Length: 117
Image (cartoon, rainbow, N blue to C red):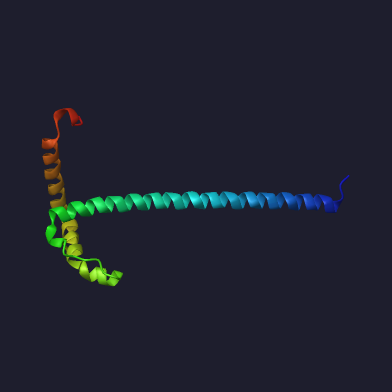
């Protein structure tokens, strides 16, 4: 029969193994979370790049804006663009009209076999 000390040692050994398993699971969870954030950041960056290219193609007058070294400097440099987009976003009725007009143009450009019903 095992002594009290031997039983206690076995319990402590199991406890340490369980703690190690918990640490490993936590590390896996963090790694998965980090990978998911990185994937989302990459997708966000790609979407922003595409949207920015479209915007500057349609509004070339804003191409003269140049990134600066600090966020404060960028806020000043990009204030005209920010103000323009804020004004547009503030007029939800106009945005709805533009979206409706754009959807109509898209539908007119889409061959009938590709249109959803």
